[in-house]
Image (tube, rainbow, N blue to C red; front, side, top):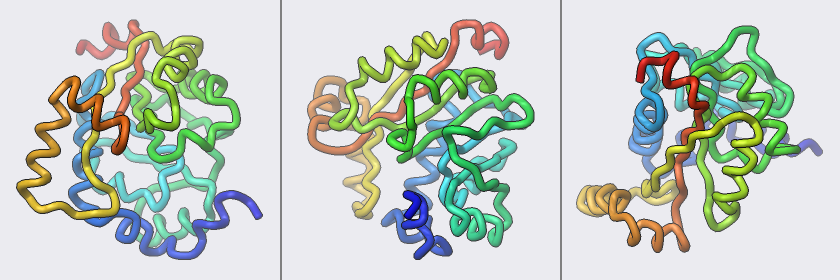
Length: 211
């Protein structure tokens, strides 16, 4: 059975069931997509690899969103909701035109060859590659080396303390947001839970974007 076949069941409610508070989680993720590293501008194209049902696109209304997923069931579910998603493997897909930002969330482990995937993405991405990273699973230094080999010589990253499977109270959510900016304490928390969000760019992209 192909890896993505396991997503066939429940694809029609993927975003609703994958997150305890879908709106908060995806809205915060979209905000980081726009602001981390080079700023995205209205009208910029965003390519979301391994996008699931494309739910993130609903929170990037000012961008031209295109999702890519290898699960036919996910693609069908996305299209039924009016989302622009195509069926393809993230390792092989290349857009017909350059994109300003490429995203990979909860899917970096699908890379057959991470360095080769980064190099492919660098060939068609004009501003930045944005992805999440579990620092307990992958060493940041190893990922940085692969990014640099692919031509991404700048990396901005920040903690993302938004629970995926639990919906905390508002005071807890505010506290977690503050902890994202707590420096050493945030790094300690990352040893046990949560992820980093990363934006990789090339130095020459800053000159082109005016940021």
